Image (cartoon, rainbow, N blue to C red):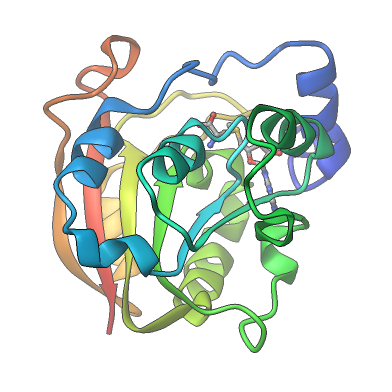
Length: 200
Ligand SMILES: C[S@@+](CC[C@H](N)C(=O)[O-])C[C@H]1O[C@@H](n2cnc3c(N)ncnc32)[C@H](O)[C@@H]1O
């Protein structure tokens, strides 16, 4: 397996413009989710980990969400984002390994998941779940999309099944929603689950 645990692996993909995962736009189900949030959500602390080119962060920012934090360990997409959004708070652009974020320093009301879970080594899935739970405030939520298919490859994206996700997440999260996404991007139709998981 390529070393997906290392920032260099991803940085090179950005430098070589080999970023097949990048949809070039906000993921439609996540845009629909953001659009139905009340005004009161706009000050909530939101994390977008493994954000890459961060169309969701850009959209949240444009909609007036003021407390959004972007984390990625590859510097290239963060730099590109900062150039696209010079008015975005630089202290909310964090170039670091998600697994190294300190829960003592960072606590979020909710986290937006978009092709980050599928990018990490599958052997680290329980570690991802533990770190996610630690970074969320009590009753905080993990919201987003998980692939509902097996890509059968030894490189990302690493897929999975609803059964696997239910089994893994239920030790630390209440599963409020885990259902096929009806409004996925055309390239991902029929292959995504929309999830809303609450720390228990
Ligand atoms: C498949 S890309 C998805 C990017 C973005 N979410 C999107 O949908 O376009 C995975 C991203 O996660 C980042 N990443 C992978 N492992 C990471 C880690 N442990 N900590 C922080 N970022 C990580 C990579 O640098 C890359 O930008």
